[in-house]
Image (cartoon, rainbow, N blue to C red; front, side, top):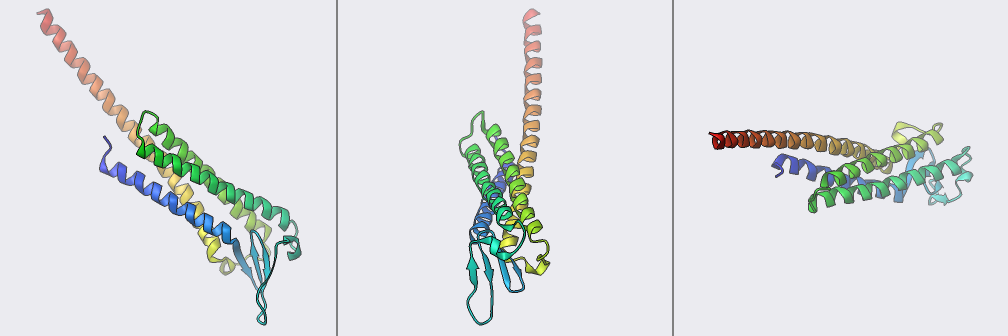
Length: 199
């Protein structure tokens, strides 16, 4: 039987993972991550902003006149999208391992945690690619709210993955120790019974 503390921690990990998936999904769908003077750079489009008119946006990122932006942004999009997909599958495994408890529950939890770790690597790769591609335009205050949403989601993927693996290893060790103690007591009891029967 699981303790209240273990159940609470596992529930918290699942909740934070779900929040990270939502943040990352919204950030990628919006896609506008950097505002540099009169230009708005996104995963999907590039916009120029003037005071006299509405933003003029183009899907052809090569029009931004940034070397390698079109190809590099495609890779960033793929990495970020794959991170969300991996996180969704990881979240599903975490939830299933708690709802349907069986002999494979711990394996499902561990595999789900590894998928979250893969999500962290992919989302970090997408963020890093974006920053490297636009390194000449990047300023700290230029990053939009959507960029920070993706950054937060990436951090949560890492935190939940490490926490999930750690809580699983701790509880597994505790379970093994209890099982060993139980077997030792049973063995001692059987030895006493055998001695009594012999006498």
